[in-house]
Image (spheres, one colour):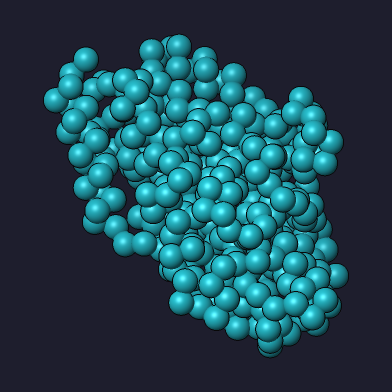
Length: 346
């Protein structure tokens, strides 16, 4: 093992982190909820444009420090796009080849971003095929399969060290409500919700973690039934979240509640948000915000006050040919009008 190269690679990743600023916590002012503050943790401002930048950095450090990644190792990952973009960035940073295994329907912009960092894309017909295909490529290249779905919950230090939970609670400390009543998060690997839930418990906060889940995902069913062997027959139409199997990193016991969100509600919410933020956001953010708004409505109806924090996962510029294409939405998602009316009536 080339210890000098490993030391160099770790230092490159740490130096990249040192050059980066923390992401913003945006306060949404909604007149419909005068005593409830809603915040968006804007993860789109990372160098690779999404929440997955944190995960990719953690996975590379985990692999390097555990002797799994060496100087000439080919990195393989199963991903619908955002994790692959971030991992391609870090692979390029330390000079390693990278291959992403993803469903054929992945947004074109994501594919372009992966290749811009020198990565390659290998496509499968169905999301359920990415695991086997990744393992096969790992054997062919004698590489390292990052396997975000297994290692996401353990690669990040959930106790603190400026993880996303630590950052949220530091940033909200001077706000009117210094401890959020709810944090709302969607699950892709389940790693971020595991970090949030563990951190909340470790610090002794009364904050409740609510995980939102799109159609076609089995995480909600796992949470409600306690069964981890559930599998689905379809893929999630909300890129980056929802899975047809219960991933090893999904930790239902650290979650307080879950909400199933219709896909049309997720897409309606990103179009509603565009007018508030004057920018486009990805569909997983729509899922998060729809769930947060349902909690805000419950709080308002109960005359409760407090803060709700959720995540702005990535930019909508990646999805111009899908979620922001009216014809694609009509063909693949359906009628947004009922959900848009609910949002406009808030």
